[in-house]
Amino acid sequence: MTRSHLFKMVLALVLTLAACGGDEGEVRGDKDTAGRETAADVLIPDTPRADVPEGLEATQPDWGDFDACIYSGRVTDPQGQPLEGLPVVICSEDSPFCGSDKTDAQGAWRVAGLQRTALGAKVLGALLGHSSVTIPLAACERPETDIGTILSYPLPAGQVVTAAEGGSAQAHPDLRLDLPAGLEFPNFDEAIAIQAAAVDVTALHPNLAAQITPVAAYAIAPYDTKAPAAVPIEARVPLSGGQVDVLVLDHLLGTFRLAFTAPVGADGLVTSPTGEGLPELTWVAFVPH
Image 1 (cartoon, rainbow, N blue to C red):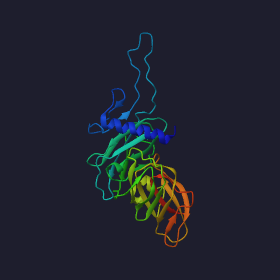
Image 2 (cartoon, rainbow, N blue to C red):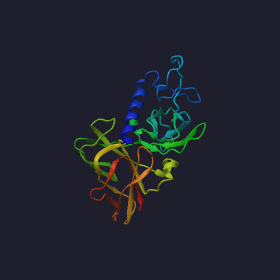
Image 3 (cartoon, rainbow, N blue to C red):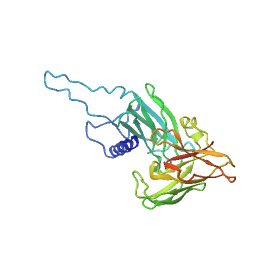
Image 4 (cartoon, rainbow, N blue to C red):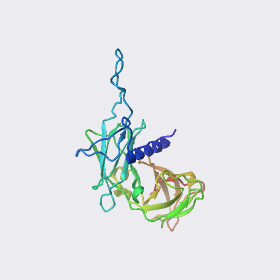
C-alpha cells in the first residue's frame, strides 16, 4: 500500500469520526488551553487492560513520542480574514496515526497527540470554496509548535468535468488543462468543477515561500485529483523566451517537486511537451529554469 493510499484511507476515517464520533477506546478527544474539545479527535490504538489474570504482568505498549507533539496555527484568506470550519489534518510519517481539527471563528486550529515524524499540515479549504494546501512541518518543539498563519484563496466558479469523459478545462484565464478520461475525484462526485486560483506563494506561508520563487502559481481544485496519465497543460506566464521548470506541490509533504521543463514562447505561452504534464491536480508553479 502506498503512502498516498494510506493517507487517503486514514483521512476518510478521521473525517467520518469527526462527523459522527467513534466507539470508546478508538478515539480520544483533546482539549486546548481554553479547555474546549477539538472538533475532531486523534486516533489511538486500544491499550491492554490492567485487570489481567494473576501472575501475568500488565504491560503498556511503548508508543515512544506519541503524545509529544502539539501543532497549532491559523487559517485566513489573503486579506487576513479568519476562515472558520476548515478541516486541518496532520498524519505521522511512520504510522497510520492522524490528528485533525476544524478552524474556529478566529481561524485557529490545534492538533495534539502526534509523533515527532509528522507530515505536512493539510488544510482542506475546498470544502468551503477555498483552496486546499499542505504546509511542510518542522520537528515539533515542546510544549507546542505554532506554525503561524496559512492562507487559503477563494476559488472562482469552475468548469464541470465528468470523470468518465475528461475534456479540456479552462481552470483559470491563464491556465488550461487537457483532462484525460478516468479521473479519480477522492471524496467527490463523478462530475466535478475544476477550479484554479492564482496564488502568491511568497506570501502564502514561510515554509513554502522558502522553497521557490515562482513567476506564476495556481491552486487547482479539487485537490489531489488522480489522473490515469500526465495531464497536459497550457499556461501564460510573465516571461518572454527561455525555459521554466513546472513544479507541483506534494499533497502529503507540502514540498514542491519538478513535473517537467518547457520552453516559453515570445508571448509567454508555456505548453507541456508531448507525453508530459501534471502527475495529479494539485498546486502548480512556474519557476525560471
